[in-house]
Image (cartoon, rainbow, N blue to C red; front, side, top):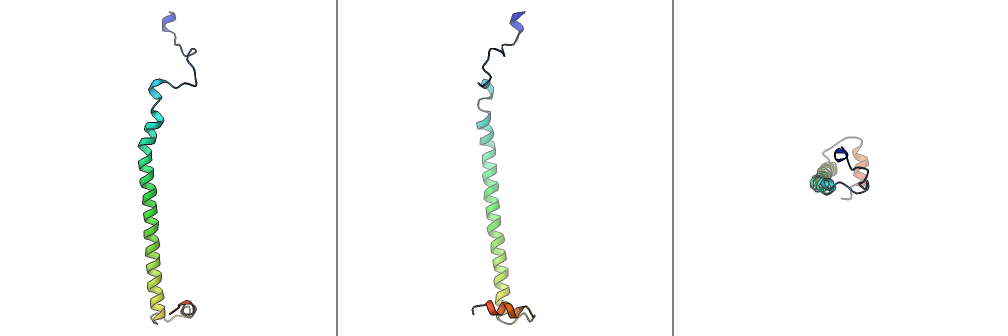
Length: 83
């Protein structure tokens, strides 16, 4: 009957079971590329959003400078246009 009993009390608790030793490394290897691609994609999206906003602002400023917009607010913008 002693043979059927588990030897869990004899095993050191701080030492991982041999089948679980590479678990953390495997999880890192599976998730790291996904997280890197996600970070890279967010960075590219930020650059594209900034470029789109800057292009829209440039078109607006050019239109104000050439007199395409005749609104009361364009007077304030015209003061800040350097050309």
